[in-house]
Length: 210
Image (cartoon, rainbow, N blue to C red):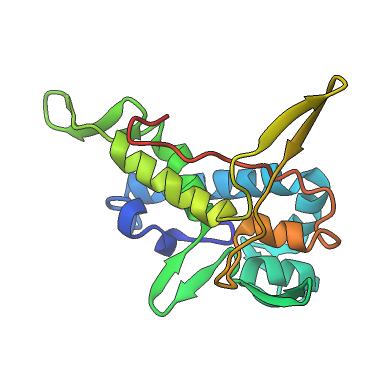
């Protein structure tokens, strides 16, 4: 595991047989978490910040004495930005018995586009062959949930324009009116702690997967 574990894979991103400790599904999911949770953080934090974070992770768990910025990122916090209070619920979110994490959605999408939930369709195994039952709608729903968790209302689609041969990109949107912020908004609002994090903007997909 890496920060998250198998208990985060519930509801739309549940993985069949993942809780059977000796099964292939359980082992494959654990390996995917190790790979893709790290990959998400490497891509969105960059090498320098991720190396710092990783140095404070022991056996997949964030050290209790880690610097405050990493405790805030992983566990969540309340912070003030431009005179307003906001809540970042953390990479590890728990609402009662319900757990969720942008890391889990990223892991699910990356592993299962190459496995049972492939981009070509969800494969239902029988003794003779696989039957295409169509997974596009399911994966689109998971993708759009991932985008919500990742960027929320931090950015709408970028407005691009050229001036004197230079491309200008305006990412507009000022964050959640509810006071709860997405991963991207948290990084943007606390840029002094997460300087030069390369996290970019994603696009939602429609029912056709585009």
